[in-house]
Image 1 (cartoon, rainbow over the protein chains, first blue to last red):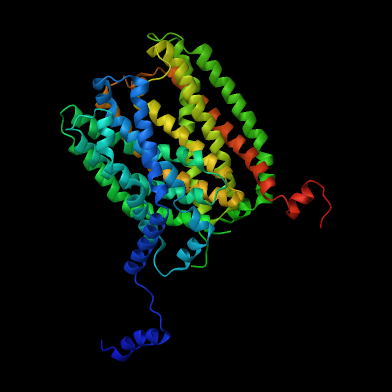
Image 2 (cartoon, each protein chain N blue to C red):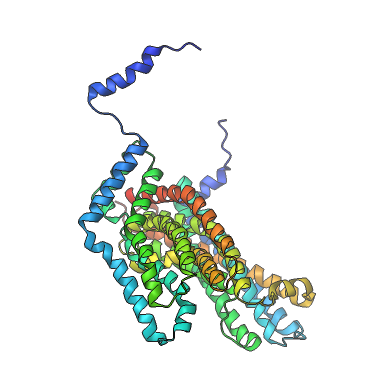
Length: 247
Length: 254
């Protein structure tokens, strides 16, 4: 199996002669991340909108239910979970829309890197910029609703597993809805069936922690689903993006 | 391997003008058979079958409720299969059938939910309970609504059909997960609700079983008749400018 070594050397030389090297997948993802972070930073005012929304809704609950700490403490875990899911929705809608409008998505399709990998990178950037702040302020929101301090770490852990999962599932729906005329409430309607199991397991872990029961099992289910979604959701998202771009 | 695995008649039937004529010829017969089966099944269920020893006459709603529940799942599977064909082979007819199935499936799901609710009020004493079965059916209803909504949100109907077909396929993966997670959730929070379905299945009397099966046949026939009619109109509006439609409506050819 003697191969000619010159052919192996020649390829990079011609590339260098052209003055251009195709970036490998890793570099492309890093470039995409940097671009998304820059864009998010330049519109940093918008990053606070989901936080503001979450604080406002959280503050409304004591007014609606009365300031009884025991009642608030009992429902706080579930309420905060639902608030986070709802706060994620508006940002999900715009995950791919501007890229579709300005033609970036067409470049994604043409790029030598796999489309699914680029989609996964976008989901990571999206999660870090819009969802992570929500989890960071969870102790504050928990304090507003008298969430027992022992439950808080479990809630944060459940959110750390559940929100990337929701962002991955939501990326598929967002890609599907990107080509549509209007998609505000439609996205919520499509996300609901997918969010049901995620909310059930996340809330199950919080409820188990609140009742002093072992909470590892539902968290393990969430983690398993997250691993599965990291592999499968970008593929479905890539298929949806192709539908959104064509025609 | 020059031989195709797909028989010739499938290619013939996949062509919109051929399907249009075929469906038009078949539809009245299916509809008539559905009506006959429904009359026989309802007569057997509402008149001939004896009242239940526990539930009295209230159980008779199963002759509507159970076939509708079966249809709500069967149509979803059919829609997903047609959607897969539409996505992979871009068959126009499959797109139309998948998208026209969604409102029918949603209707059967709604009938299931409403009749179940009507039955639940005298039997369980409540219109709605977050039982695992009920919740799964409600989620199925939202899946249908999502498919319908996404399809109609697109300007280009063929693109909308493909996007909605992909959503239907995502739903196929999601539905078993919802089913089992809801069961887990329900057993975590409250005690077991009586599993009426398995109770009935094991001990149903033949006098009650045959009308149920005839009704299931009737709903299937109705679905096929209805989907043929809906696919005909769907094809007509999709192929509006084509020659065969112009000839059909007697428009002057271009």
